[in-house]
Amino acid sequence: MNRSVSDVVALLWVAELFSISFQPRRYGRTEPMLNESPTRQVLRIGHRGACGYSPENTLVSIEQAIALGCAFTEVDIRRTSDDELVLLHDERVNRTTNGRGRVSALTLSDIRKLDAGGGQSPPTLGDVLKTANGRIGLILELKTGGLAYDVCATVRASGFNRSVIYASFLQEELQHVRRANPNAQTMILFKRPPSNPGTAAMKLQATHVGLRIDTVTTSLVTALHTRDLLVFTYTANTPAEIERMKLLGVDGIISDFPDRI
Image (cartoon, rainbow, N blue to C red; front, top):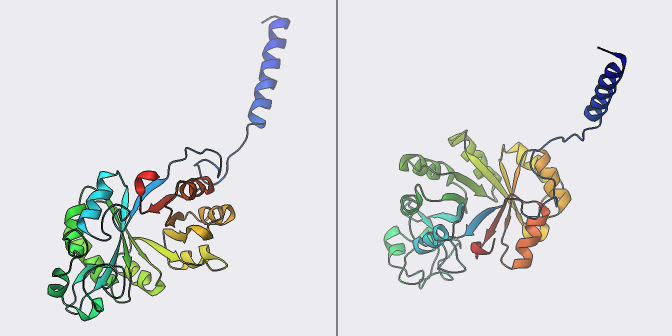
């Protein structure tokens, strides 16, 4: 090899070293940085089915969420006086049906006679699992204590083959879910997050954190992502609210109008 060729090879070798040395490094999560891309993928999640379009927590509303292409729909679980698991958000049936009284004081037969809108009665958890199976994931919010073991058992017995996330504001319920199903996905819900929500979630071995839209900040999302926690927010309905949640880098948005996500 003559000298001029040797010099060229040496220069190329040095240039390659500098190129390698000064390549930018990425640490931590492999997804785009917050605010890096407005097209970052966010999960579309229907709220109580898709309750902006159909009566909440009904099979019609769940069908609506499926039709709108939701990855998940969130529904609320309570127990009747005869130990049946039904979909109702409130402690009483007054707001969402044509009946009156506490869910816990009514039998399933009583619940079946109620009209939750459009001639739909509040369904059981079993009804929902059959409707959603193979079609949409479920976020099951446990509204009261003492539900975890029966809800997990019902899901297991149903053979449901899509993702399930067990959610609650009640930390003890999520502990019971973890005991009933060590591999479960769980989401701790906060109306107002504590000073260190990541620590609270990690103590529960939660996989997700659910935040109200007015409490979400870039620093909070970053801190939760650092702990490998997924962040879902509720309930974003206007285009401005939805766009803000996307820019803050959340992983999933729960909405009454999920087609807007």
